[in-house]
Image 1 (tube, rainbow, N blue to C red):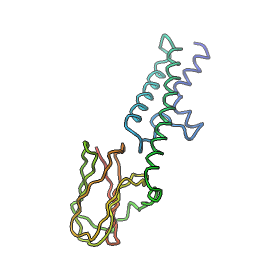
Image 2: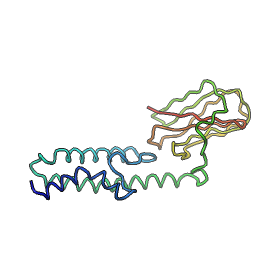
Image 3: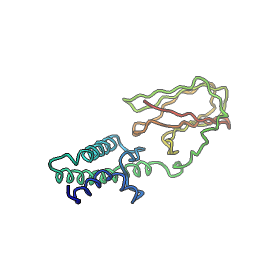
Image 4: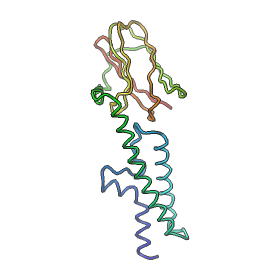
Length: 198
C-alpha cells in the first residue's frame, strides 16, 4: 500500500481527535457541547461522527479508498458547519436571557439548610413543562429557581407569604438537556435539588 494512502488512513482515523488538540474551540467526536442546542443538530452531529468513524475503521479494506476519503472530507466540512450552528444556537439562547441572570445563581449544591417534605417532580413531554411540588414548615418569602448545571437561568417563580405547600410549573420546552438544578430559597434558608429527566 502506498505511503500516501497509509497517511490518509491515519488521518481519517484521527480526524476528530487531532482537530481539537490543535484548536481548543474545535469540537471532536462526542465532545459537541449539547447544552442549549436543538436536538436535530445534536443528532445530526452524532450520525456524521459515527459515519466518519465507520469509514475510518474499514478504509483499508474498501475497494475505492479515494471516494471514501472524499466522503470523510465532506462529512468533516458538515461537522464544522454544525459546530457553528450549535455555537450560534447557544449564543442566541444566552442573549435571550437578561444579562443579570447569566451567572446569578452560583449556589453551593451542598447547602441544605432548608428542610423540605414530599419533594417530587414530573415532566410533561407534550407541553415541555416541568412540574415541581414540595412541602415545608418554613413560612415567608423566597424563590424557586431552575438552572442548568452550568448555572444558566432557565425559569423561576417567586414565593410570597409562602405557607405549607408549593406546586409550580417550569418551562423547559426549548431545552435539550436532561439535568437541572432547582434552587429553593425560603425565609433566609435554602436547599438545592438535582433533577434528572429520563
